[in-house]
Amino acid sequence: MDAVNFINPSLRNLMPDPLSFTNMQEAASRIIEAYLKKEQVAIFGDYDVDGACSSAILSLFFKKIGVKHDIYIPNRITEGYGPNTTAIRNLIRKGARLIITVDCGANNTAVLSRACQEGADIIVLDHHTVYRNTLQSMDWVQVNPNRPDDLSGQGHLCAAGVVFITLAAVSRQLKNKQCKNIPDLLDYLDLVALATICDIVPLQGVNRAFVSKGLEVAHNMRNIGLTALAQASCIREPLNTFHLGYLLGPRLNAGGRIGNPALGAKLLISDNYMEARTLATRLNELNQNRKEMETDQVNQAEIQIANEIQGNNNISDILIASGPWHPGIVGLIAARLKERFNRPALAIAITKNGIGIGSARSIAGINIGDMISSALSEGVLENGGGHAMAAGLTINAQKINQLKIWFTEHMTKIKHPWQNHSVLLIDGILSADSITKELIKNLEKGGPYGTANESPIFVLPYHKLVDVRKIGIEHISVSLAKSDQKILKGIAFRALDTALGDFLLAKRMRTIHVAARLMLNSWNGKITPQIHICDAAEPFSKPPHPGFKSSISYH
Image 1: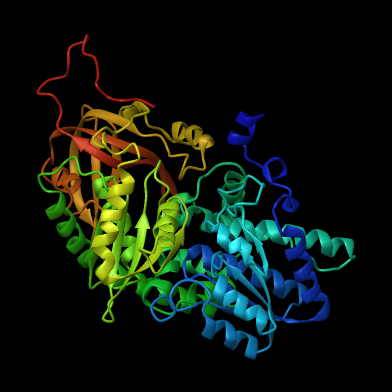
Image 2: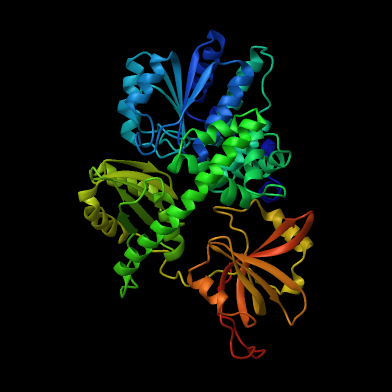
């Protein structure tokens, strides 16, 4: 049965019982009460993709059933992460009797306690790690599979998944009360899929069904805002996980990083195509600006890290870089450092008032959210939290060196999984001639691919690089052939000015080894095989003899 659910993930088989979540009954009942009493509700969301999608799903549901509501997304720079006293107080003054925080609020004890004292009821729908001392002083309802007393076993969910399951519980109660016009939750699966992919949560359990079925919904382009954003991204084929994670997600994030944080949620709830197109165009422009800023600041961070680890290949602590950067870019800097050095990485933007705003990205085996929580509890940080693969923090800039020492001491207790980072695990060997649409479609049955279920990597040995060129501002396009036969197109994303990119550009008309993932490319109505290049290498001077034993490590 596990194999069947993996190959054909369905909500029928994988959807958890909503009532298995701690506080779910209370949360659903309070939302029903707001519906029956026609109360004003405020949705307080995070400024990233998960927050935007979670806010939009709640908003679309409330609009269908007639619940009066507003969405509030805080400014990353001036307000920081999560609920803050000023914003919450303003929402209460505007009439909010119920405030629902999504993708934030898990540990904002002081702010939420004050909100309760001022007459508002609070529901937290989150997935970030909850500190035990938070539970002891919690006067509100929190549905969160990662709270210590939750036994649902659904800790892999993103916030949008928690919201979806909560609305399933709400829908049950609405049906019991013979309410009409109950929305079809399946219509929101495209947004759940988008958030699940972009928040880098494991594609296991119900998450596989969310993404698989969400892509089916996305193919129908029911969400006007998502459709406008796909058009602004020049996507001319059915949406897939790559589109969600690498094209749509960054654009939705751009508003929260360097522009208006409410743009993403506003786009996803829009029912007017002209408005949606305007919003999508603006997000596309912000994303282009973000790319330019990111390129410059990532270069600075890489130089800083390279100087620190030069001559010390055995360095084992988390990589930490800091500078006068834009706080909205630090998550991207951390991600790029992690990719380049294959180690957990933390980037900190130092503001003019001496506060550091940081973001961390991790690798399998290192729970960065738990480490940030520990550093906070020990007084190294001012604020912070997150989950296994990503976290955020606030720190006094004068304590950054102390943080480096703290991480170094803690990492010595962990077996370092990046010590063999030069080994690329390979699933098989193929030639350009054998890569067909049928093969790729069969491989797609193992999807959706993503965190905790990476797509397979194949080596294409001894292929001639018949063409190589730069595309865009950071990618490289290639054409490969085996013995001058079938031409196979490929692309190396974000490879320009990297070791991989320099290698490819220098090997035109030469024979090389390539490691790549297989994809289908749709262009002008024609679907063709394509590869996404992970790495490349110089071949032996001549093909190895038949008795040669490969040193490639296989899964």
